[in-house]
Image (cartoon, rainbow, N blue to C red; front, side, top):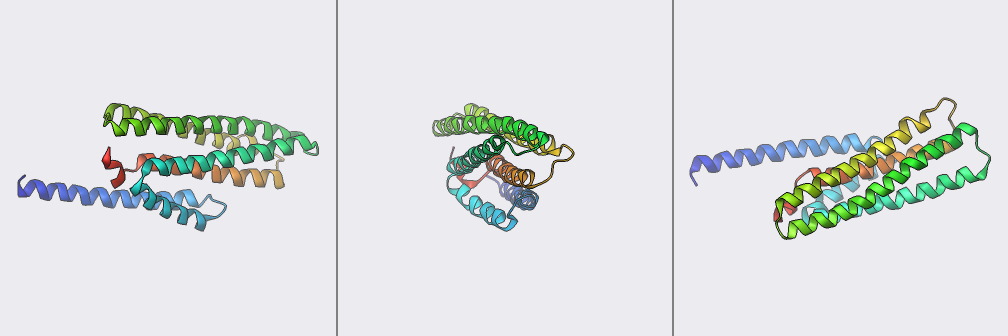
Length: 198
């Protein structure tokens, strides 16, 4: 390999590293500003960045399992609120609409976990075509989950006259769920040194 080729590759590597660092930094600020605990969110991302270098597939599983657990907890809370019978009609309608969105989110996260297993299998046998196929599927299911949560936030709980603890608690938890889902998308989109082993 000639000296000029080596220099060119080094320059490309430095540019890639700078751009990726800037994008990850911007993503951290952007995602965490909606968090119920922005500082904890930033610390979590820093920890995930380190873990991702070692095992990106396990990192995404951790994030998705966290999102699944929180989704099921929120679903249980919202179902309980709807059964109490002391809510206004528009609150009940918002909860029912949001429960549909949570069901979509849970389903998409479960599909994503299966795709991560398939992606890891393709990685082990170095099948790049299959790897890219499952990588795209992961992003599709996760983006679908984000869209469902967004509809809960922007449609179901955006109805006029909806104020009070039910709305506040739901929107806070939905925002944290969206962060977990966006972090999973980030994990699959941003390359890491660990992912070069495929």
